[in-house]
Image (cartoon, rainbow, N blue to C red):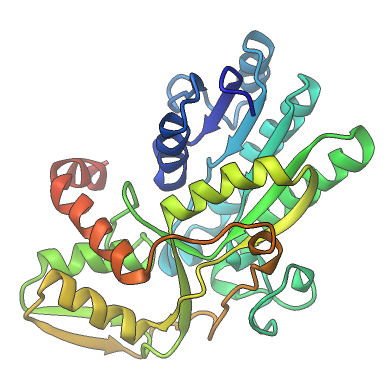
Length: 313
């Protein structure tokens, strides 16, 4: 990428998109294009085409997605598959039509089979059944991966699909029910003085990746991949949910009681990623889990009014 290239970051207000924008600015890129949902509805094909037609876009980072934890995925599966499929379809199609140099597509570890061998290699995709609670989101993202591959095969469209471990960090969704596990826990532990109820039994293991490490990987991958490859991005830090809760209890200094609701689903037992493909080219994560959790909590405390406003909406 040239510092004067026009770079469109879709979903710039979210967890991943905001981190990519920060990283690009830090590196000195001058022409970063962003649009709010009111300015550009990515589910509207006509609006997306008009945007690409009137802006010479060189690179696209697709961080626009409807995301959430187990509760949201399980209860709003129709919206998850509909909205995510529409957004990525429009972005990939018009990026190709208007000659974008490279398309960086972002997915999730949940695309892999529930019982895939671990650490999960890229080759595990479509080799088994998905975790039912986030199947709709996973199928939408798998569609995006294969759409980008098809456009690469037929039209020579350049791009890469990055599949990160479970993400967390500044600008996350801190909804106590619909957010992912880390932001939801941060919100609950900060605000509930006496007792916090956690889903399942705490035994599932998860690999967590601080979002700024993913942003760094996105820039790195944009320089090293071009054939719509599927590339894992991990941290190598695999902990149980109980261990995660214990870490956050210490960081937040929570004095109440933790209880486990065994009637709620655990989700996939474990799913650490094999990320040797990108690591072999020189990329490595910079943040430990404890460092990332501390930074996430500091951002939450410093932006509590913004968090409350978003929760109301």
